[in-house]
Length: 233
Image (spheres, rainbow, N blue to C red):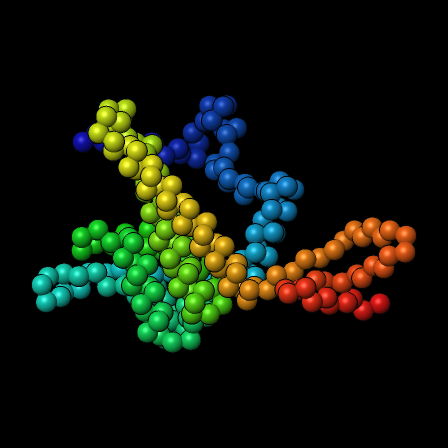
């Protein structure tokens, strides 16, 4: 071990070198000041956070089980009742068993053996929660979308990491097929969620109308089945 001696303390009548005497005793780092563009973006982020339904993150701890240690998931919050109520609101559900099942399913995406990667688990939960589900059906779709997205990225990483020699055995092609199927499934889930949220309504809004001589124009929103909803005024 190398010992670095402390510098000698100067006495009152000791004279310091000119350069050392001129140097300030301590330099206080000035806080970073965002640029005008950064300030604008940070304000936008603050509004986005305010408009988003927030909920506690999850944590995992090892507890004793019948066959050895098992991972237990719970909210990272001082009051669990409040935490799970906030989570139910964020997932658009009103019953705890449904929330518990969703969290267990999403936590399983981050499980390796008997351990759970907390970062990956919260990533999965945040994906599903970020879709802003409004009821139980949307919550289930959101959880599936999180699972499909994460699986897609796993296969994308396998494709990127596969050596050229894997072409002979068809391994790379298998990874690519799986990735493409998962990506198509995710796109189908997005469309299914859109249709569910619109309740099957279809609208055609006419913005430009050309009327020939002797014709008559009807301006309005054309709903499903050809029903015309005339605009007031």
